[in-house]
Amino acid sequence: MNTLSRQLTRPLPVLGLRIPVLALLALLLLFALLVVVSFGAVAIPLSALFSAQLSDQQFAVISAIRLPRVLLSAIVGAALAVSGAAMQSLFRNPLADPGVIGIASGAALAVALVIVLAGPLSGVFALYSLSFAAFAGGLMTCLLIFIFTGINGSFSASYMLLAGIAINTLSGAATGFLSYLSDDQQLRALTFWTMGSFGGALWPGVIVAATIVLPALFLLIRNARALNILLLGDEEARQLGVDSKRLQRRVIICTALCVGAAVAVSGIIGFVGLVVPHLIRLTLGPDNRLLLPASALLGAILVVLADTVARTLVSPAELPVGILTSLIGGPFFLWLLVKQYGGRMGL
Amino acid sequence: MITAKHIRYSVGDTQILDDVSVSLKPGTLTAILGPNGAGKSSLLKCLSGTLAPCKGDVYFNGVSLQGYPLSDLSRRRGVLSQTIALHFPFTVLELVMMGRHPYVDSAESKNDKQVVQWALESVDAWSLKDRVFPTLSGGEQQRVQLARVLGQIWAQQQACLFLDEPTAALDLKYQHQIFQFIGQLAEDYALTVCVILHDPQLARRYCDQAILMKQGRVFTAGPIARVLEPENIERVYEVPPDWIGGWIPL
Image 1: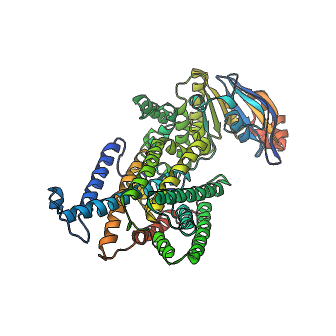
Image 2: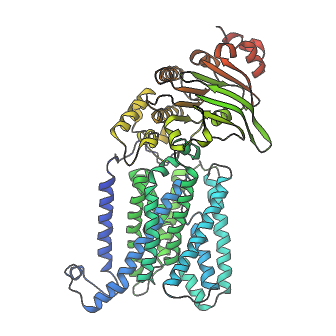
Image 3: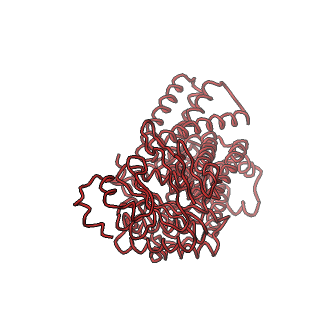
């Protein structure tokens, strides 16, 4: 049976629940942001935070280190989760994810090229050039996969996943070759970067990511209803007055922008784009008008929490957060494959 | 009123439609019949503007479909394709509401909800409204998709409806019920209906006109009784006369 969920009806009647659900998620995000700011090597009790009685040192830790880091992880989480959700609609395939189909590794390759070949860069210019490189890499990969999977017109799961494997392998090899060429410092930057981390988060990074991600998020959410229609098929969407080609182009560019910015500031953080939209879809249904904003909020919450675990678990050292999300996301992906697609993929 | 003038359609070197000219009149049901691979679906897609013909042109009320704005067309022309795969767990209600997309600005109005209910009731599927679409049976899915397309052109005068084998998965009762309903719509709203069918009996009973296709060309077209003469059937389908003797009583 070609169904994502084997339930005959949906557990929750979600018509009309859109605003309350989003408000609840937004509150949770706010709460998570406040709480995790107090965690870390320098203890800052919540009571001190709320009563604004902070020592100079505590204030400096929060404003210069924790706040940018926490905000950046929220932006990246939102960007990854929304791109996953939008891509799943674009490919009409619930397994699409920027990591799985190779967009993140394409972006990573482009960034590796900049790190190794462009020489030392610094400041906001470096961040923007890395973001732009990651965007260009992501866009190229996205287009490539889109062309591949569109060849037989059906966007089949097997095609998409196989194309993703090929692209992941290719860009992995190319990134490997670049690491081989690089000097010690570049190698270190590259390695950390492919594991995904918010370790170096500073305000410029937050601003760069926000100025790229927020407009793209806004545009994607504005096209949510048209994205629903696109799920019926290209022809059906056109018959219902949706210019499917234009919409697809727009979605590809926005997701490449989101993934590019996320990869540029934090490296590769896997599986957020797969897990988050799935959780939302399982509980609230597939309507993109709810799915996209709810994924953004839940993605932000989860990555903020994951990053807090990553930086406190082995404190004062820290784990790359990408390793943590992959540790959770990998088994989840397998579970998804076995439970919901067992026997129907035709691979 | 839909008019196709000398349309040709080919994919690579394969000629699929070869110089086809037909016209469909408001208030009538036109059946497209013919053997497998005769070009029926391609003709339907060209007539509905889903495919652009390589040569020739299709006119909707005198205006070429090529220049017709997508949003105008989407309020006046509904198309039900043969297969629509949907792997996402939308409910029946949400799916049929998608048919109202051309009318919805930001949120669905009361009227849209009412139309969705009427459309579902007209195919006897209102009781399925909260079911998750991919869990429905083939026939149920077909009725729900039909409701979506009916909702798209609900209460529009002079609209067109294109249906590619709408009754393929339906049981005997629904085959008749749905054709009766569509016939009534055609009469009430001057709807132009074009439908691909394999069952000559059903076509003969509910359609006014027919287009009989063979190898990408129109073999013959006109009033249904004349087109479905036994000798036409025999020549187009290449079946011996005794196969069709039983099912063509007038």
